[in-house]
Image (tube, rainbow, N blue to C red; front, side, top):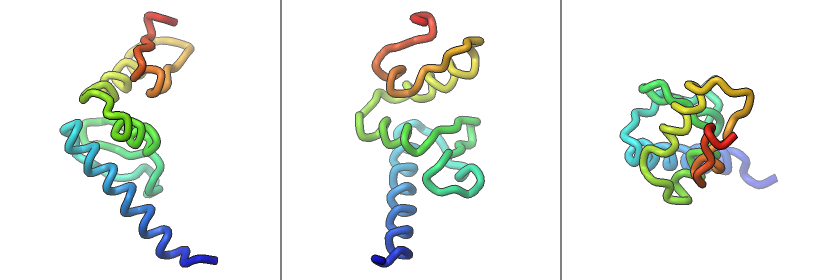
Length: 98
């Protein structure tokens, strides 16, 4: 087996790099990983929570600043039996469309 410890260290470093870029872009302060699971759900001081996959999607696809924040705000404030994932939201789907 290849050097697993090195692979883990690289993964954790890449996750942190994405968090750093995301925080700078969104004006957020990183609070930590939920349950200390690096690469899982990230917590931010202003009460935002995002998965690393949504953060990576936001950065890699150059989604406009604030869209991911609006998505979470809409998701928690709307009383709906359906949830909109971030990818669909970033492409224009809104709860009023459901």
